[in-house]
Amino acid sequence: MDNLFDEAENTFETKQMTVSLGPQHPATHGVLRLDLDLNGETVVKCTPYVGYLHRGIEKLGENMTYFAALPLSDRLDYISSMNNNVGYVNAVERLFGIEAPERARFIRTMVAEMGRLSSHIVWLGTHVLDIGATTPFLLAMTAREKILDLFEILCGARLTVSYPRVGGVRNDVSQQFLDELYEFILDFPSRMDDYETLVTENRIWKERTVDVGIISAEEAINWGLTGGTLRGSGVDYDVRKYAPYDAYDKVDFLVPVGVKGDCYDRYLVRIGELREATKIIQQCIEKLPEGPVMADAPKFTLPPKDLVLKDMEHLIHQFILITKGPTVAEGEVYCGTEVPKGELGFYFISDGTGKPYRMRVRAPSFIHASVMPRLCEGGLLADVIANIGTIDIVLGECDR
Image (cartoon, rainbow, N blue to C red; front, side, top):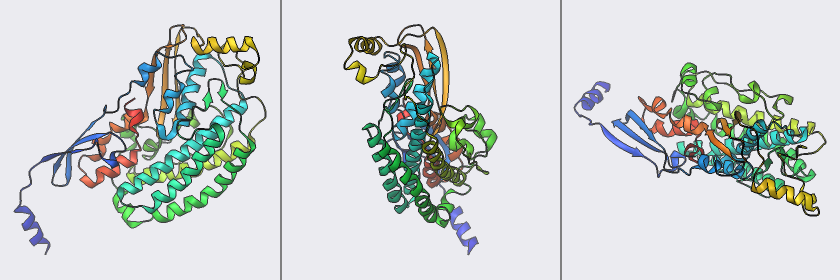
């Protein structure tokens, strides 16, 4: 019977054809376009195209003060805007030479891990949905909604939060917020058990992800991959461990790594990161120290709002900082942080004025989109969708 099929297949000749996947396609996770040269269902060549969403955030940042440009970072990876804010303010603080108080650093670590949970939950739900399963998506989004509710309690915003500030955070955390967050993270591991029951050993899921999109550790490093996409190839590198910031050096957590570097390994790594994030949040709540949430650095930080409203001197101080911006000596700085999608880096050049002379963003999604040809060529057309989901990109930061 096999010989009959082989003979029948050999009688038909297939011509190579080019198919455009995206930019209007739900599985490209934004306006990503892939030109695919196909021989039957085999991908002969994959060419990614970006730029359909370009908004000039870096150039906008160069025409705004360091304070005013903070909300731009929300619009990079809008799925994890809190993590972008933390990365931005850490870079500016390094440029200014100031350090946030210990309580603020713990709060930042806590909310950044909440952002990691939110982002990874969206990744899990959409990745599984792209491949054909609906139930995990619905369960995951229910959990994410609770995280957004907690963000709303914290700062009044749900998606683009702008909560961290240069020198600390906008406001202290309330007891209601801490109580509800603690209750959520105690319940979240049982939610994770439900997700894994549906997905991890599902034979269809494993058929679609095991041995698909394999990239070795050496290749992953050479391509500049970071985050779960790099760790899935077995490279134990996490900015939170090797260049800790905020309170990451004061909490204990593991860095999950893969072995083969396929889609399934990258899935397991991010599942592990979801579990570790809950442990970090719990430690931050339990170890949260007393004290102020803004640095005592009047030259670089805004005065307390209650003083601004009743004291002319503080009102003038705020007015000058907002309109002209804090000035800093000439120099340059790069600061990388571990966001859910990889290493997010901000690079500033100061010319001594209140605005950055140059602002550049090292966005992980832009780097990861470039590796699509390596993952897809030689595989099947259906595997392209699995490969897009497994690198977890968002075009907001790719086309920054």
